[in-house]
Length: 451
Image 1: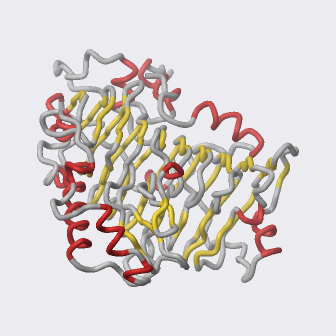
Image 2: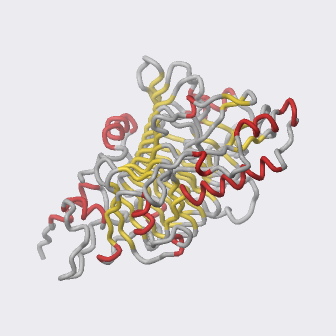
Image 3: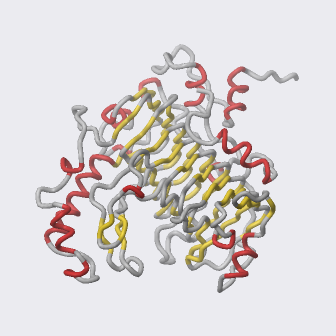
């Protein structure tokens, strides 16, 4: 029997995703004013074998959403309504839902559309100048802040969480139309299953009330709370063709207090608290500090056997650390392009407690000051599998480099060379490493899909 490809199937293959399921006959789609390609994109599922999120039943998101749960949203209130209607309970809404973002949605937008600032969210008893005066190490010492001002800061954080943390339930697809942005907010995927997020630019998920942690490191550190996407206690999550940036508010522009940078941003995409079966593909991470934490604690417990994540064809551009940093999980890192450098660069792959990173055919474009031996970092792990890496350093020629051997030559203790597992969930054959920057640069990030 001769098989004929439908137009939907052809476009799905071009978009790199499974064909969209057909809508029920006679039932109009509320998004029918969108372009045909946009509607197809929204209905697509993760392809078979495309990373850990394809395990078992795979990841279909909101591809089967009924017309009444298919929405186009243009502001925070509409986004919350499309996710279920009440941000406090939306995390438990498992009805299939398909949400298109049109334009910019700002987490600091009040219910009536009025822009909010940090002062609007601050507890009446919190002031940064008073906080700095009270907890200056020269006055307070290097012990954890306690007392009324710290309690007021914590209440302020609770106010911001209610405002800027947008809760996402199971069986959800959120897809951006061309130019769509989510700014000043966190997509919180917690205790959810089967979620897809595609073609969005995430910008400036800032924390108005960073915490001073005097025992964090030798000199203490300011720590912020809000990721751009946080995946917790969830599984079957596909994050694809998004851009993550701090926009016009980079941490490098923040002041210094107590001799440490006042950091107002946390991660881009953190996978923690027993989450698992996540695929992050064709994303662009640009100009950020902390990017991706996989596993949030060194404590041996429920994370063991979880935190299974695939990262492929992502661009890490001008970023500093956690690319990713891994605890416990079996994490497949292949065909990614890293463009790294600058005085503040720290490391790429963080090898944490009982981590099992399998890094293959990744391309590293480095400033002349970055030593390939410093692309790995010991966070308490013992081994990783690393093969097929290429490095272009400064004005030099690209060449294959054994990153594990380079690390072991100058660092002690050595890492072992076997992570103890071999990935089987890869949709396509590996790209030869020299081809990685040629494809990932033009194709990774938001607004690269034909929508």
